[in-house]
Length: 608
Image (cartoon, rainbow, N blue to C red; front, side, top):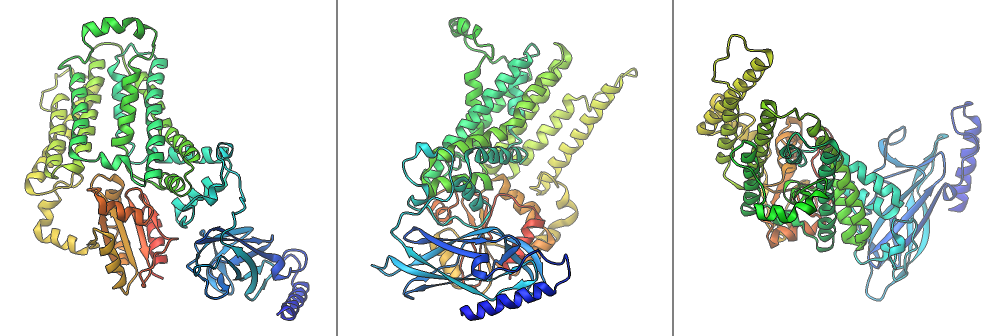
């Protein structure tokens, strides 16, 4: 074998000398064992971490890794590897490649009593100078009981007395986005972790789950009246965001340690109805039906204390931030799932909690700007101020309807939206005649009122005709029952699975790739996936070639929790893929909302 490799290296050198100037990197090609250096260590008795150091100007093929053990009684599962760089290779076509370094997690199954063995790993790659090597096999001695050597520092290491990688269950981080984020927590430095999660939070701030918090915070600022200063508005906004951030961190740590999301338990009609009632009461006060204030005796008792708190009512604002985090924004996204996965697998609640706190601050940063902006748009006392308060009262009513939508019959939200639009149009004088000398703004707001009135009437007619889609209320009138049935036939059809046993039974009987979608009625991102991604014609065509399963975890019962735990998920949305043999494709799972284009790329890989 060594003679063959030497001959290949000599041949490569000759080819390099004959290559045109500038067509290849300078120097001679290295021996394959020098260009690709393999090492391995056991992370725990069930997992080996394989590391390959790749020399500069060299790359490895992602699909050419091969592993075996000596003795052969030790076996390996499917390696879990990160996504590589896609390259149009002259030898193999479109392939994934790695440069500099790659780490793989290799599941191990060893007989009782066997703790030491030799791993033989084969890799294959190329030199940028135009030379490709045959598979090169290298060896590493593995001791499953040895403590792993830590290869990267992490934030708050000084607070921990143990190596996070040796924690029970510290393996199995999938190759999907949430798994890579969990790997970031495990390997990166503290400042990079916090900065990255703050950036994740900024991106999540513009998702539908966060939108209802804007009128909530704005309503709090406007409710204090036009005399509120910009500094006081900022303080109220900061307290709201801090309450939200502390709740995200605490609830996230609890979810990571327990494996269940606290917010999922709160998504029921009683809790959401109570919270919606709070928003209704707040909105009615903005319409001038009554004033929300403390009893006079309590006001006098707290007057001296309140005079020293320029922010005022900070406790109530903080409570509103806590409730908003738990009830208004329960959707799971990849950064949140990655942090929870890291906490669950390592028990490192300190780093996980710090990352979640930074993420929540990122989510709340735009809210600070919204809070200050809400103060800046407040006019002097008078008719304008009353109009602004009523506008935010309408927004709070909209949040109340939005909260109740997942837990009440679909007809009720349609009627509520229709009523909200109609009454808003009436308050904007949609049906009142304008005086001849009406100014431009009066005509503008009357026009807005007319549009709202027509929209509300259309929604009311659509709801009574059988439509349950607020965005297309009259579609049912021109498509008819036959058209609706035709559209339903074209949409991807899912089979429901309600337990792990049902899922396993379907996986063992399939001869097609399988897609398992986790869904809940209260999950906004789940409905985004159904409405905007799954209904795309190209996506639906690809999904039609797969066995489609759906796990509805709305009830959050024991079977639902078991299904989520099976795949290290903490809540929906989540999409899991399996091959034709029913084996999970760890590198393809999707957590959170994904648009049709990127989701189509995932489906293409799943169908290969």
